[in-house]
Image (cartoon, rainbow, N blue to C red):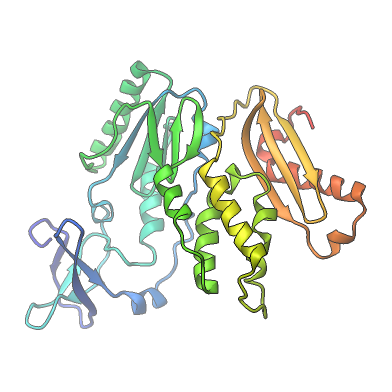
Length: 332
């Protein structure tokens, strides 16, 4: 790190503790505890995107994912990050952003958005870059432009990524010309989750499962017995309703459909439904599902008449999918 210009010797009159940990590859990784510095740091409000890749890849048949090499270490940083690897090893400070700083992810995302600004065939989430094209000729041109941008900004890539393939795994999803499906490797981790024995474990399961809620019809209604166990002053009592909901979510994720990519030049169809427990909505186009949405009824809403619940479902659906149907003709 010293030879590569990642760190340098420091004379700053303070330091933060550091330890070495081993990676899966056997390589050593240095971890610095910046918790006290993070408490005093001014937070960067730049948002980290959760990109709606599904909305932008319609018509794409060729995909590539690129990963920056030691991503954060490619962005310069001011001083005041001094640390000591151990007794007698001296004092050092980072010249590039270290992992663990509160503003690191936001600053890095800002840089990447600036570097790839104006390239509609790319999406970037931190150091993961997705390039998508309609055909191989266009893809070659798009990759060339991305490589040029990265080179002009002095950024380097890892060599172990997927280039020019028909299906790609990105942010927990599998994308292809057919649309979007859950990454089976990620889904397997959820379906193999053992029965939660406390609220913390249940929150972990629901957090992982909820990431794929757009694939599951009536997700909110199905998961309601589980969320009831997390309510304030509620005793964690795993009952038959919770077990049924737990298994149903696993089953739905295992059989999740491929969601179609939307075409904003064609008309959308919106289906809505209401029950005594919740509201549901399905966004379709040309008979293909684009996304599911749902939520449980609030206490006061449960007293609504049937017609009022149906109207509430329409309001919920149009708000949830407003960026698809706003100022456009659609079928309800």
